[in-house]
Image 1 (spheres, rainbow, N blue to C red):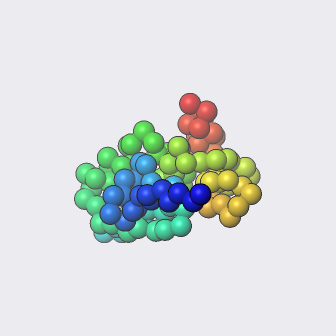
Image 2: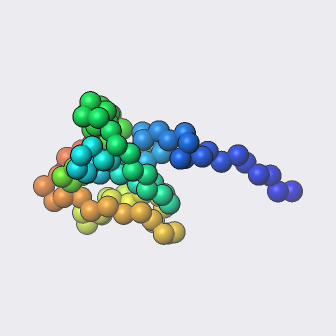
Image 3: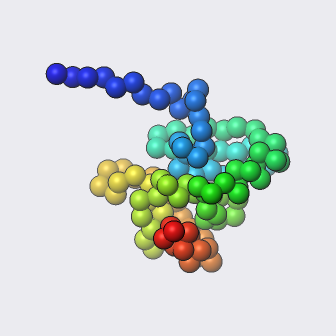
Length: 108
């Protein structure tokens, strides 16, 4: 018997802390949120950006790039892995000077 589970519509009910793997802050308030199989771009105010950067779920991994600690599955050779490593994982390079900080944040 096949049962269809209702899927969350990420585009309508988007929550960065729950849905995004990482986000990058661009120019003029444009923020790109990256997930499993999507990228959502939103224009945020300076206050909204500051709130997002200081959110406890996110850790800085490069200049203007923050990763969701809850979505990280591994850290190897300056690469963050999101999802499982066997299937096609999303990856993100960690700046070498931030790698120790990221490891410390992941251990908490």
